[in-house]
Length: 182
Image 1 (cartoon, helix red, strand yellow):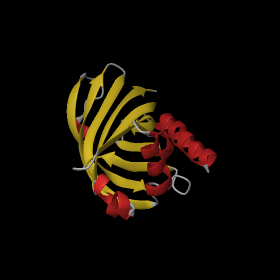
Image 2 (cartoon, helix red, strand yellow):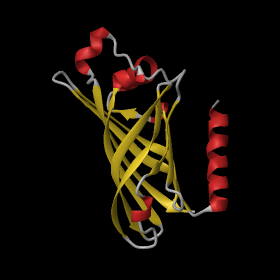
Image 3 (cartoon, helix red, strand yellow):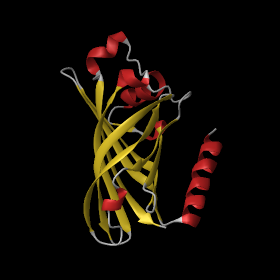
Image 4 (cartoon, one colour):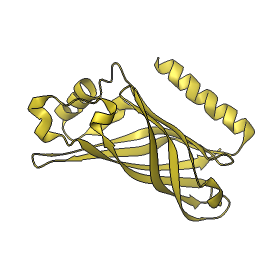
């Protein structure tokens, strides 16, 4: 399954690259944060794959659930095995586009507010999402940043009753990916 997902992602990058200018990375960052009165939980994944087709504004992300790193090993284990069930659902993805792509001048350094609209798939559930963010163009790089919230119930992510006070129902997600022109 991992090989199939990698092959599909690589094929997408190659096919899009033949048709238009593409920015991409395999080392983007996604963080999440859960705040409760009992405990704060945060994790970081620095191996996010992302691709942006400049002409169309099409945008894709792929995140391996097992690449999230926690401060506490036990939290990481619970996250992967119990909450995200990474054995069944190893990846989370976003496939969509930047709705105001024409407002971004990819040839001129600057920061541009953008909105991405598409389908977020997590824990085997796909939902339509709209996420505000910004693109900063610096030379041959496009830095994409966004903050948004994910409601665990929307993605059928269940927290065992004995841990319910330690995990927020809504998780803050922060994305920061520096994509390079290919």
